[in-house]
Image 1 (tube, helix red, strand yellow):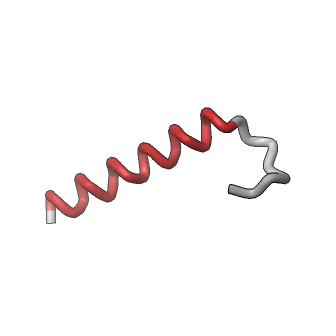
Image 2 (image 1 turned 135 degrees about the horizontal axis):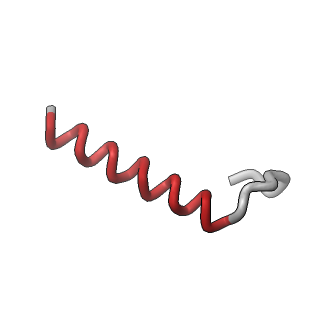
Length: 30
């Protein structure tokens, strides 16, 4: 995560969690 980003840490962690879930679902669906 870049230190110069204005995005709140909570939003970044939420996005990462969604990405992890999406990858897991994609792997299972495949």
